[in-house]
Each structure stands twice: as structure tokens, then as C-alpha cells.
Amino acid sequence: ADAFGDWLDARGGTFRHRIRVVTMDGFTGYAKAATQHLTQARQVMDPFHVVHLAIDKLTACRQRVQNETMGHRGRSGDPLYGIRRILLTRKSLVTPANAVKLDDVLTSQAHLA
Image (tube, rainbow, N blue to C red):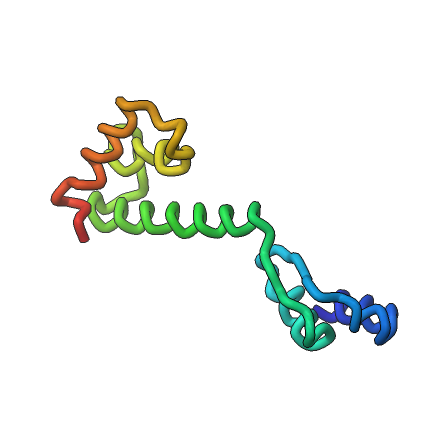
């Protein structure tokens, strides 16, 4: 936050006032500096980082359910471990066989919670 804030301060008020949009990743330091030094600017996250955040949350959820239902981290042969790649595949690229596998695992009584 300090480095970005100092850099913005060094550019002067005219430069800062002209900035309307700040695109950033999930690092809170950038958001903090932008909030303090670019009050008029809209803060947005680029699509890559939005997708990355969603993938991280989905993976954390899968791992939590895996641990709660099996009592250990994913291993070869575990249902939730077996679908980890399919979960991260674009819908249009999921094969019919993988769609059935995904549906079977996600609708299992063991994973409803």
C-alpha cells in the first residue's frame, strides 16, 4: 500500500484526479492505496483474478467436504478427489462421461451437506 501510495503521490494531484478506473488483482495493499489516494476512481478486478478467486473457493470447499466425509485429504480413488479437474473445466468442454461422473459425485447423499 505504501509503495503504490508513494508512487501515486509522486505523480501529482492532476495525474491522480484524471484516473477513473483502477484495475487490480486481489492484493489488499493496492485497494487500500487506491481508496486513500484515488477516491474518485472505481476499483475493479481483472477477469483472470476473479476466476482465480472463484477457483480457489471451489477448491477449498471440495477439500473441506472431502476431509469431513472421508476423514483425510484427497487420495486416488476418492470420489471428490477424482472430480477435481472436471470441476475446473469449462462447461462446454466437459465430456458426457465426465458430466455423468460429476453428477453422480455431487448428488451423492454423502456430499449433500
